[in-house]
Image (cartoon, rainbow, N blue to C red):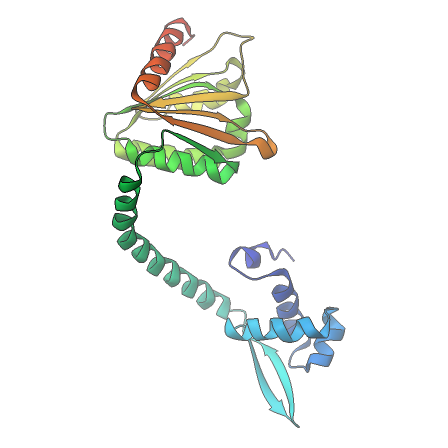
Length: 250
């Protein structure tokens, strides 16, 4: 049985194991749960309490002993709905907090250089990047390597959908051996694609738009994007992009 989805909605491995044990053996004392699950007694009490708080386990007292039962699996849908309601509430709170945070950010001044690490960091860079872009703005990408597309293609496709809805344009200069991904971009609205000559490739890429330059590399633990906010530096990189654009293959 694939229980990965239970982890994804917020249950720990131990909670899942105890919940499945309860489903399998039915109403039971902790002694039986310990024996059937193989989990130490001290942990069973702790995680039974967690499951009860999540509404996934209940108990009755018989002969001065607690007998535990698993909630009907259909309750998992309600559990998920409750998490969704909590997320919606958090969204509202974050939305209300953003103006205050932005005010603090202005008071602290602009940081010209930032480092985003890991795949979450790269996604954060692109999400921030998109919020700054407006309709008719153009983002320029130089040297998009295959590894970047292979690792975060799902996220990038979603990002492009959001970009297109905003009416933001993009120009790509892909590595020669990444034409399969380049062809996907060619079919997208507001997109233009060219390719570097054969034999020229790099594990990194450069993203230029407005006053922002992002230099990214995906390679295990060293996955990183360096972001620079500087008008003159961005112009220099954009001039470099335009020169290579003229030399690139369509």
